[in-house]
Each structure stands twice: as structure tokens, then as C-alpha cells.
Length: 260
Ligand SMILES: [Zn+2]
Ligand SMILES: [Zn+2]
Image (cartoon, rainbow, N blue to C red; front, side, top):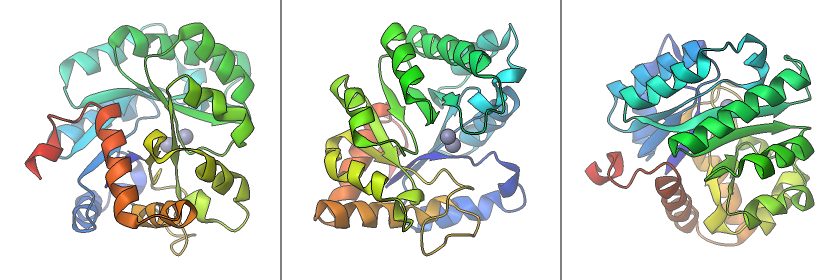
């Protein structure tokens, strides 16, 4: 299994990061992608990924932090991608109109710039969307990114079908296990296994039965288990297919998986 989206650089893991990584390995997770949400966290993600064979990372600025975006930041992100082969995506980037921690027009500008950067660098994009799918669509149509994943997908199926038609992917977190997440389970029902990845988004969104605790990559099996149930297939099939999808998406075929 691959945890395609976790925040190992988050301060929530500062005290016991080594143990978290070990537990993930013991739980059968071959690879983790640690995702950045700011310039400084991106630096930390690169350091963590450089330290472990089986950890890769993204670099990018989250819509919550769009207000801190500065002129030279695209160049900083570019430099990180050149410096480390462990950087496999630009993210997480996107629009969050639920919290509005940054003004919406600022978010749109920073998303547009980073999505364009991902295209120029030939890297996939990890996209965050909350109550903003229409503007995401407008910007995606303008930039035509090479490949993107809509992570922690919580949108209605009819609002995101277009993404799959454009060849992009969806990824699902532990939220899908929550009782009121019928909308997400419906998307899982419609989305082909060949178009999805799984993620924890740790330390956030722990799946049932761990809900309320700090989330960690080792818990990802609960997401795979739920998908297997909805798709009426085996856990092994979900693990194999989502792993394959993540290997292709993040370009891992010559990476850590070969060594496992
Ligand atoms: Zn997110
Ligand atoms: Zn995230």
C-alpha cells in the first residue's frame, strides 16, 4: 500500500516521527508521500524524504497559506524540485472557500501560479478543494495540468466526473468511513478503481475505529477496507490497484518499491 498523502513534517509528529514511520512499514505501507503546505514545511518534507528510502514528497503552498505567498516563492519551489529527486509533485495547492484563511482572489492567483508551475516542471499536482469546485474547474481548464489528483475528495459525483474524463485521479481519506459521508461513498461507488488513490491526510481525519485520535499512515488500511466493501472486491485488489496508480502518478517505478 501507498499512503499517497500524509503530513509527516507536521509538528504533531515531531516527538515520535521515527516510530510513526516504523509502524507504517510494519503495517505494510511500502511508500509514503509527505505533502507540504508552506515553503518552510516543504523544506522539512524534502529533509524527511531524503532521510528514508521509501518516503517521497511534494512541495507547494496550501490555499490556507496563500496570503503568505511572495514573489520569489515559485523559484524556491523550483529549486527544491531540482535539488532533490525525492520531490515528486507540486502540492498541496488549491482553493478552500470553507475556511477562507486567505482571501479568495489571493487563493486563485496562488493556485493558478503553482498549477502552471507543475506543468512547466513536468510534475503532477496534488489539489485541495473545499466548496470551490467551480473555480477549480475554471483554472484547471485554463492551465491544462499534465496530471492531478483531487485529494480528500468530498465533492458530489456529478460535480467531479469531468476530472476523470480529463484523465485525472481522485483520492480518498478516512472521512469516507464516517457515518454521514454518504456523498463520498457514492463517489467511491462510481469512480473506477483504476482512477483512485488512498491517503490518510495524517495527522488529520483518522478513520473509524481510530476517529478522534491523531491519524497516522499505519491506519490507511481502514480506507482500503471500506473501498473493498463498497466495490464488492477483495482488500488485496484495492491495495494492488491503488498502489499501481500511485506508482504511476508519482513516477515511483524506479523508486523505493523496487527495493521491497
Ligand atoms: Zn488538503
Ligand atoms: Zn493534506
